[in-house]
Image (tube, rainbow, N blue to C red; front, side, top):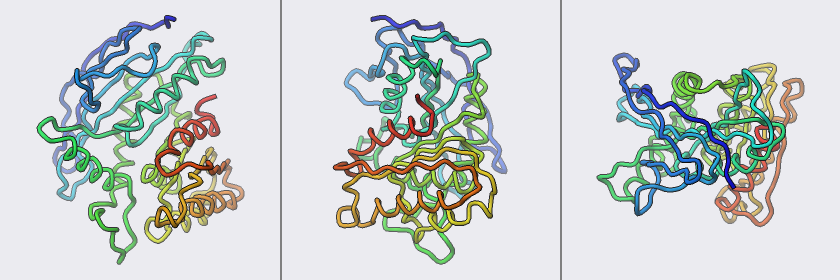
Length: 335
């Protein structure tokens, strides 16, 4: 079966490099790869394969972009480049309306979750009568070909800790192996100030229909964004969020959301796997996720629509496909 595909114009994109006083120097780079209508094969630094390429999940994809993100920290942390993947999916059932604005799904942990969320979006949007087209934008980390796979994974995990975990309360110490954690505010600033404008400069996006999704620490970052900058997105999917972070600070913040920010017209999905018990995880992931959802639901008058789910017989990793697929439907990002 063949799916229609539109021509795509490749050109120069900004590659963000750190400048003085936190500013960015912008240089030119290639921002897209043409993709054949059937094979959807693309050279991609973040994916591994014997031939250096890997097919995308379906054949009606459009283009995958990758570019370097600017350094997020001004406190001496090394320059950081982010691998940004963008997939556009169009419905095969409905025509694209004139002046249509694309809804966008942003997902953290792009190196692992971009293929999964791309597949979910392809399956949903390709045969949707209600969503003519959508974008998936993932944020991952660039692999260094001079390093071993194990070294690259270790680097990505370290950068992930830094970017996805909020700053700790004064006097509190980070867990073992997470000494560099606490850069969530900078990471969110990068998304809002650099990444979103970049995406909007290349695609006709709807700024009022944007979703943030993440798992584990990515779920914590999703919750952090909702609690501290709720207008950044209209839909939030937090899979197995690490709500125990900083002595359960997210639960305490959730209980004061209305007083701090007032109206929050957003849809929120929070979930956990049925096997994410304290005995298995060291933390009560199910109880924390349920308590977080309950605290948000109790904030009457905010306009929040909160859904909570536990997926039976799923652990911290096996729950990811179900949580993201169900979550994106529940908040209305896919339908």
